Length: 111
Image (cartoon, rainbow, N blue to C red; front, side, top):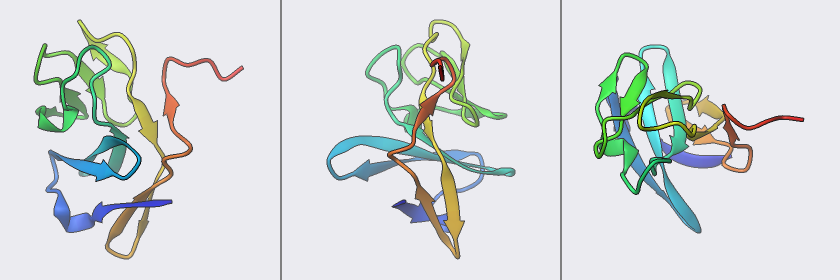
């Protein structure tokens, strides 16, 4: 598990870009129902998803207004059609960790 942030580093309903050594950054979103970590780069263009607005359980791309469900990574609004890669999250005390080696995409086959 990789340390992502402290739980109070991101307010509910907001996203935070988290640099990760040796790879592209991830985004951390805090909703009332928990914390979610996914790749920070939009699958439609080179936008930073952490700069997008949170609308319910979705994040809106700041470039083209496509949306993704932050809980599953699924693309929910055009022009985005390819899901974001999401990562399992674990809370230990007041710290958020993610399994960055275990990411999945909602539109990838598991067979």
